[in-house]
Each structure stands twice: as structure tokens, then as C-alpha cells.
Image 1 (spheres, rainbow, N blue to C red):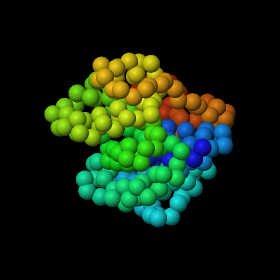
Image 2: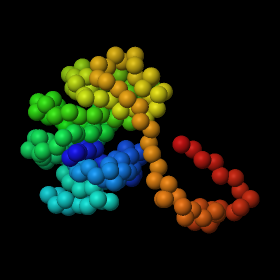
Image 3: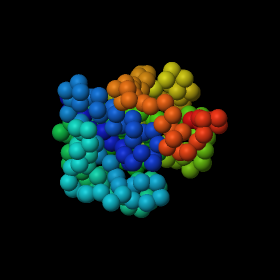
Amino acid sequence: MKILQVISSVSMNAGGPPKAALEFSRELLRQGHQIDIFTTNVDTDHDWDVPFGTPVEHDGAIVYFHPVGWPRQWAFSSSLARALWREAGNYDLIYVYSVYMFPSAIAEYICRIKKIPYVVQPHGSLDPYIYQRHRGRKWWYEKFIEWPNLNRAAALHFTTEDEMNLVKPLGLKAPTFVAPYGLFDKDYHDLQKGYFRAEHSISSNKKIILFM
């Protein structure tokens, strides 16, 4: 299959979605699929200095960067919208990361118009705790943009049963499925005990607290 992934940013500073997108691409490529990624140059508090209009190879996937504009926090990009309108029909499936962002909203809307199947992974954005934040302004956005897009998705992808069950009260109409993240075990074969402590000058008699 020829699959397009759409995500606001592939910077690791943006948290889990970029890592998920790039590693998911890596596995799909291993299985023989063709993977492209459309994204923007947004990177937390600044913009990446990346090439526009020139594809960048990343572990076999082809990444196309588009300049972000105002409002930046929404990752708005007219260039990305034009590229999606022009190229979306060339793909068998479009896989969209997160909600409440311009790249995901415009990708889903264009897929609806052009009748291209698309899958959405909310990445926890619909969890009740996060869902309640900024409820007033989110209500309008959801009513006119987010819910029409999500309800017409070919599927919603959740990574745990709990995440899927927490979203059920919203009454979304799209089919859902659960598929946990995988790990490339070879990436962890050469781990050295004590490396983290040495790298950060932490003595062996001090405790380390991991927070996720």
C-alpha cells in the first residue's frame, strides 16, 4: 500500500506522536509498504531550519516539510493544505496523528471530500482530563470541525483498551480498534548498565526516580 502519514511535527521535542510516527513508518516499510510523511517545521518554541519542497529521507520514509504560519500553536500551514489537496488522491490510506491541530483537521476534511480512507490516532487528546481543558472554545471547534471529521474516519486507533473505553462516552461513530505500540528490540541490545548515571554524573548510591 501507499500510505501517507500527516502529523504536526516530527521533532522529538513534541513528545510521543513524532516517535510513534517515525517508528510506525519504519515497521510499515519493513513490511513492504511505501510511506510518505507530510508535516510542518514547528518545533516547540521555535521553527526548524529544514528544506521546503525537497523530500527528506528518514529511515526509508520520505518526509515533506511545510512552513508553519499564524496561528502557530495550531500548526497552521497553507503550503501543507495545498500539498494535501494536490497529492492526497495518490495514496491508498491516510493516517492522521492527534486532534485539535490544523494538519489533522485539514487532512481529514480533504479525505472526506475526495473519499479517501483515513485513520485517526487521537494520542490521548480525548482523555476526559484533557478533554475538559478549554471546554468552551473546544465545543465550537468540535461541533463544526473535529466531530464531523472523526465520525467519518475509516477507524480510530487507540493504543490501549483503557484509552478506547474512556472515549466511548463521547459517542463517536467511527469504528475503533486497539493496537499497542511495538518496540524494535534490536535498538536495546547494546544497552550498558550504568551508562545513564555516567552520562549525567549521577553516583551509584543515589536513587533515580523515573516519571512518565
